[in-house]
Length: 88
Image 1 (tube, helix red, strand yellow):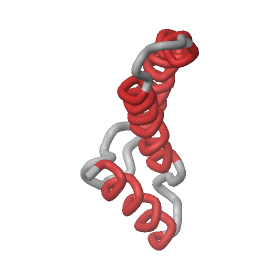
Image 2 (cartoon, helix red, strand yellow):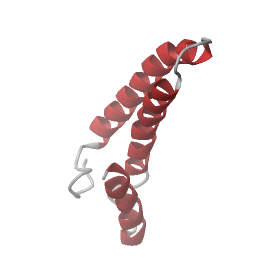
Image 3 (cartoon, one colour):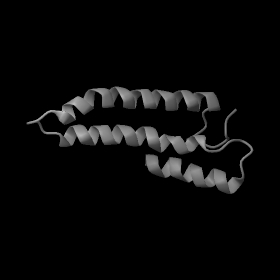
């Protein structure tokens, strides 16, 4: 089922699959970025920025999983606010 709100109107299975995909993407980026961050003599700021934004995208989507169809309206609006405003 879906939650009935735009921006987060995926079904629960689709949301879980997207979140798992984002975590997999984070793992792949971290797996290649961490050795580059440990290397001496290289500029690490851009690599750290890319790794941080990758983690942010995955973690900013997580509040969309905190409510369901039977949740109270205030709880739904609170977490929907986080999803919408963290993406913007």
